[in-house]
Image (cartoon, rainbow, N blue to C red):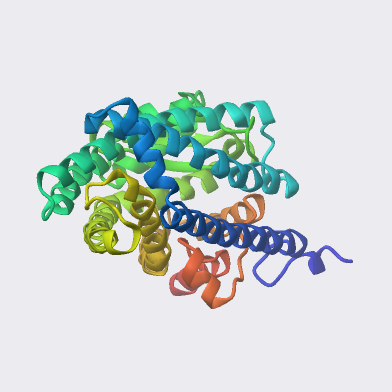
Length: 383
């Protein structure tokens, strides 16, 4: 086969894209199986009384609601995590290695999962305790109170994520390439964005995927470049990647994304209130503040997230088009945008020609084919 026959009309490697299609298929099928499994398990837990029995067991050790809720949650969440880690292994380890995306050792992967388990256990325990406390104190308005505190927590998480959470999983150091640093800082200044620095992200020990990001808000805003990006892309291409990220900040996409998330959370908490308020008639709960209804709480979140996924992804794709358009104007190197998009899609195994329904449900970025078409239109408009 000739070299030309190895690429499609947009310049994507046809063999890699065939692999990317299978990769996407396996990911989607596994996520659907996981959804069905956990929804089924949640209903089994409450219908057959396993959750109620765990509540009674916990209450036998500690009568105070704060105490027995903690016991219930630690045991219940650990049982959930045992099943979850099986799906996580299939998804983030087995499939990733099968398609050559991940190079992470099993020991390193297990350490990351342990960190995630412990971190989420502590965080979610606090969330559950405060949520069920608000249910006890205000059974009719708990969902509004919880939403207010969750909103504050969401904004705080966006602020601390790049400086506290990400360093738990990746090593960061100031970028030593002075020329590239100057170019990116100058590009940020051109966009009217102040960054605290440009950092190299040690990702090559875990993944072959290339990562370029502008994370944080306020005085935590920083440019992050993975070594897998630095080693395979030209300065012009990297400048384009960060130009896209700058577009998100200039157009205030982070704020818009958080606002949409907060609206969803308000709707979600209302739906949970409706479900839990009517559940005692079916599952013999002791009221809305009965910790035994936690599986229904969780499964409502899970199902609602899937139902709203097409809306979120459609909104996200719209923002991504805005960021691409801004990058093309800011950097004004559409040829580099096109070559970087080819590299990113092939290197990160992004399938560029999905079925429209797959795109609507599972793509938070436009497929690579559409992004190149946007750049080609920009080129024609300037010719």
